[in-house]
Image (cartoon, rainbow, N blue to C red):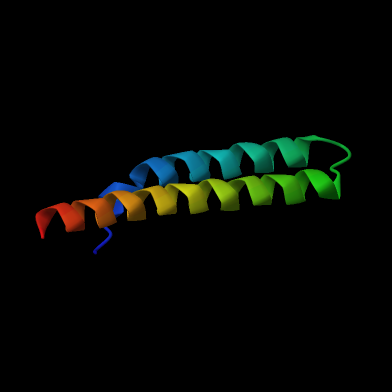
Length: 67
């Protein structure tokens, strides 16, 4: 099972703009709560994890069909 950059482009195009926009919003906001930052980091980690598990499941299913 091999992973390519092409498979992760949707995740990259979600994560990078999300980080840029949130950093801008966090710097422009006067009072940033620690819970907001932690919640955002958890959101990105869980979104990345679920995307990776989906890619892994599809590739695993594809490998079993070809054997």
